[in-house]
Length: 231
Ligand code: FE
Image 1 (tube, rainbow, N blue to C red):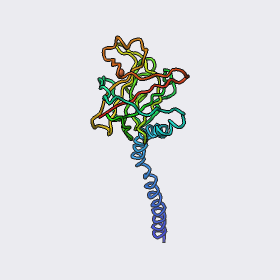
Image 2: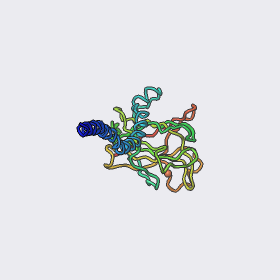
Image 3: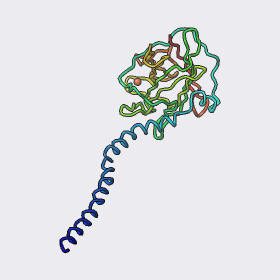
Image 4: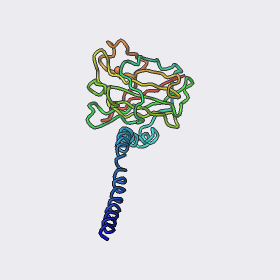
């Protein structure tokens, strides 16, 4: 009887232990929380641009409507916008956004608007533009995407860029770099646009007066107008 009780007690003890072991396994399931953590890490970078994308969700059309800004009917001489050096500060894969404004960026608020036209002055809807520039103190962000962004023209072939007036940096007058094309990576025009009355325009060896914007400084927010003409 004693042996029987001993065996029975042992059996009960083992039975009691068994679920404990099983419970360890489910608890161990979160151990794959390593992949879960990896997943979180993957989400974060993707999440960051997503926030920017949310910011950027209004289209050029929405922004024209909200701002009350209008464009005259497109005009051009048919001359293609001259290309200009890309320079060393281009970063690919920038966020899709029409506004490059972020808290803490120094510089005077400016809106740059215009058409992307073909050589017959016909607006090109869904054309691609990729802008990059310095802040108002002449500094590029070469680690992140500050003052960098790509967008597409609206159904009327208009682009809308909200940004700051760029600063000078050694050797360069204020300018905004841009790539323009009907489709990204195909016959891309790489160029720069400039601002009238910038004192260093005449001493900048790259400056081209054909790439001067028309600048309206009558209001608190400057408005620069420029039509790009591409093949
Ligand atoms: Fe530059």
